[in-house]
Length: 191
Ligand SMILES: [Zn+2]
Image (cartoon, rainbow, N blue to C red; front, side, top):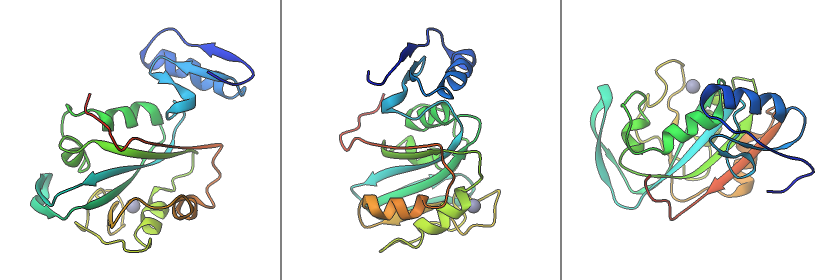
């Protein structure tokens, strides 16, 4: 661990995360029950993006959309977890789960290899979704994906490859985030 002060939270579940959220306001380096905060998303709420690589084209059943063709490429999904980033992102990383959101149909078959997040209480996910759709080479693989509760064309965009850091900075601009982060593991294995 690094930082001026270090605190380890012993415990798990909601209470541990609640304690970590309080402590995080005091700029401590916090290790929570769900893993070390400096290397992963914090317990605080915010907006996130998931990167998923499809090395081969694949037919995938996605809820009410049914079976759909997904070409090979880098897929970027935008979501929000104002109730807590770490719990939500950890759920996305798991291979076994109940299929609830559209993105679950992809993440049970393909590991999430990259995550971006920003701590914020602003509902900026739709703005982010529109901006990623404007990245160079972006296309919409399945209109309506992840956008059941909003008017966006999609919250899932396909890119020819992983976006650059400057591209992602432009996506996340103008958000009043108190913290931002990025983690990528191109060799991700399923847990
Ligand atoms: Zn939206």
